[in-house]
Image 1 (cartoon, helix red, strand yellow):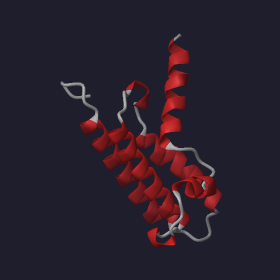
Image 2: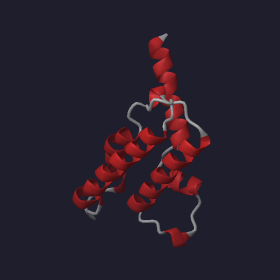
Image 3: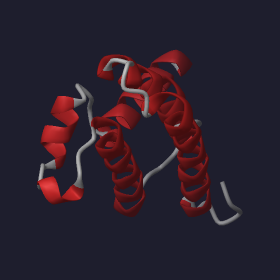
Length: 119
């Protein structure tokens, strides 16, 4: 977190780190045709999503932050699922196909778990 309490820099760093991890995974596992889609999504959730949302329990997010995180998340799922932007598939259908929830729901769930732990 920056001196003024803004999360903009932290969000950009988290997206950058998750993007680096996603790139490395694409080179090694996600482009492999003999790996099942369900396994690719599990690896994505375990590695990339944790890099993206590290420390999110303490974040106070604004809409602009959620939009940035959601954009990265959906683009990554498009890449893994092999969906092109020309296919005109809604974000809800992408999430449904990946059997996933939105970033906002994931962050809220994580924050509620943390609050429960603190209490």
